[in-house]
Length: 218
Ligand code: ADP
Ligand code: ADP
Image (cartoon, rainbow, N blue to C red; front, side, top):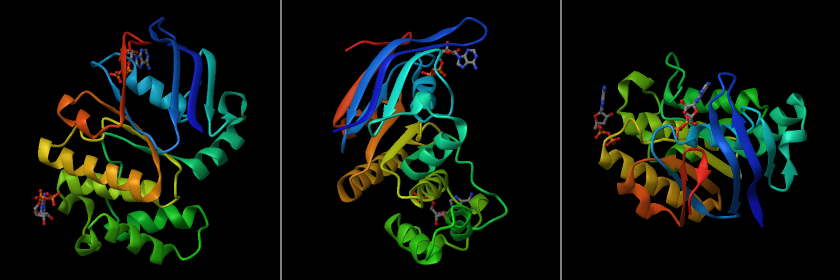
């Protein structure tokens, strides 16, 4: 089934920049899909629209069969929380809290039960069990990104969108993050759409969608 579908998606920013010019994209359930293109080609804009973090100028976004473009802000926020996770290039961790607490807070804010058990399971899956008491500034870049992914996993997303998740990491750390995505894709059935311009990581994808000047080129 179709997890992500965009129909004739346009984004024109207020300064007149046409960032997306009629994007028609389908990502199917269980795909590990890459979104590749040069800097400024529209990758971030597309991911933000798919995640419902910004609204299109024209066109529609369907997620899990639901038209999110026609949802009001409250319904969209609820739908997003239950279905979509977003991982950024910069990790946005809570610096005053340790690794475990960074995950606990996500679950507590969402009113989940058995939050600690769940957080510890995820941290073990991410091989961070020996870092749970560390603060973010005591971690390597790769470890910080694993914590950010752990936060994203707390709400059991069906779709994980990532915008240059390894943009701040060296190639070895980047490969480990992509191995982790592959593992999550295979073990938990999460559908991925990952923007990157790192061609050395393209071998991890099932399929690559290419974008240039706001247009898909394949
Ligand atoms: P990428 O993620 O591939 O680097 P972006 O989606 O960030 O591309 O940007 C696509 C185009 O839209 C670029 O020309 C960029 O300068 C422009 N752009 C992005 N955000 C804004 C904004 N808030 N206002 C105006 N132009 C923007
Ligand atoms: P990774 O496991 O992501 O490859 P590294 O190899 O970069 O991590 O780090 C090796 C060890 O050094 C890890 O135990 C990590 O906790 C520690 N470390 C890395 N960067 C820092 C830092 N800035 N401050 C404290 N410890 C660090």
